Length: 58
Image 1 (cartoon, one colour):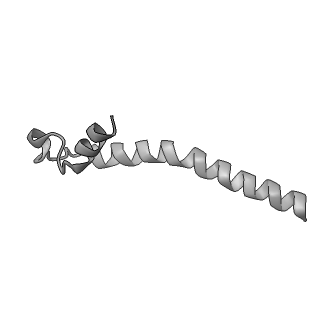
Image 2: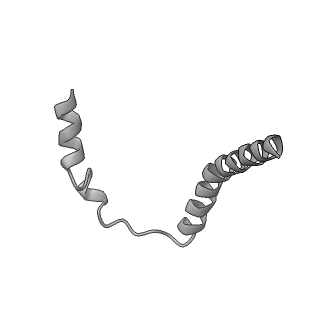
């Protein structure tokens, strides 16, 4: 099993047909929105935890 994982990780490109894919006009905005929706709740949770610990300590 681990040999198969090592073989997959050694490959630089998993699909050579998709190596030259160009982004469309609105793709950057879509990627930015998707990243924000993924990262912001985690960051808010970390800051909320930090605020709670600070409130408890002081």
